[in-house]
Image 1 (cartoon, rainbow, N blue to C red):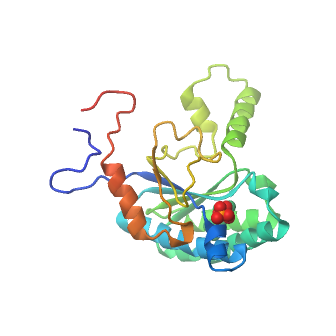
Image 2: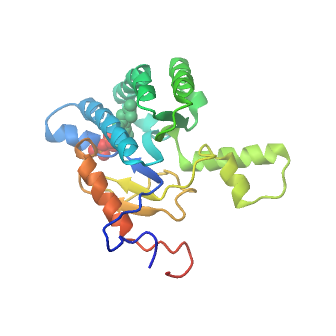
Image 3: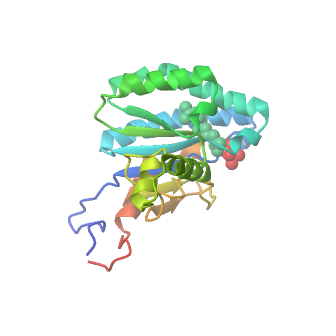
Length: 238
Ligand code: FPP
């Protein structure tokens, strides 16, 4: 029997790394006849709730998709609102420090507004010694963009012995184990350019719940489902 199956005594194995596509903010707002930006406010609050819960139950890594390389195509007002939420969160992120949560950012960060880059560097520095949950926040992130950047770096280094390990080391996620469980709420069944290299052996869990309504009990459902999966990683069942 696989290590990841629920044991007879009900003991569970936690995924080491959970990744979440925080989708459905717009529809959550529409259902309430609120502007889409209100959905992002609720989504950002929910991110904090879920991160704290992950820290509490002992998850080691949480990666969240906050803004993709394609999200710039949204109306300027919506892009600005998300950037402002990020600013607010980053200014406030010292709160996470006291909770022993480490913050890291992945994506093409150099293309972000300068004040956001400075706030991100500050948040990373302030929380670097935390030993609890590591939050990787993906901002201006795209999986293809990440792979292209890695290949460019390898080519310019002159390295000719190309291995999977070398590519992994050049990704924004270097040093972070691949996600065990990828969650997408809101009834969509796509990866949308999220962690496309890292997801090779990830388990996927989809839910119709919209992100702002995605509570710790839904995360628990996902972890329970994960425990019932037989992860053979290309091998045979134990
Ligand atoms: C997808 O929902 C969500 C986004 C593109 C942005 C996610 C951003 C946040 C949750 C806030 C970021 C800030 C922090 C601090 C984490 P959607 O807008 O595509 O929803 P829809 O599919 O219902 O329209």
